[in-house]
Amino acid sequence: MAKDSGRGGVRERLFVWMQYVIPQHLVSRLVYRATRSTRPTLRNALIRWFCRRFAVDMSEAREPDALRYATFNDFFTRELRPGVRRIADHLRWRDRRGISPAG
Image (cartoon, rainbow, N blue to C red; front, side, top):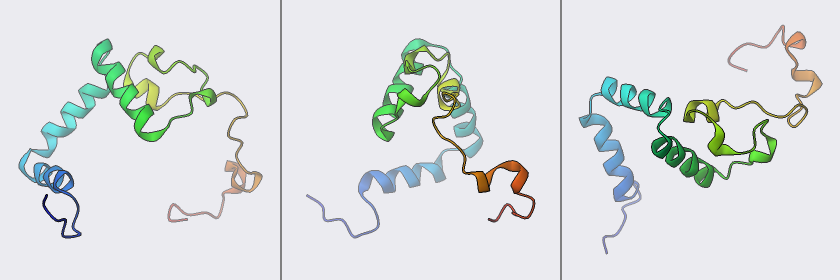
């Protein structure tokens, strides 16, 4: 078994290397199309992977069945049920007059 030199595993280095080799615009177009695909096999595979990888709590969503979204993008930008993530009073839009994009 190869010893890791602390610069990331083989998979991570291969992933980074591929980003240099594959044209950026091609990758962007492929990701765009994949995330907007309505094909059930691709859409459901992406949604299932994302839910497992990031432990998504679908009980907060207006539509709790993750596989009912038309596309991965619809799932990713899903609406939440009213009141599940209340915004603190001091962060409401009307109070943000002096806050810059940098924080």
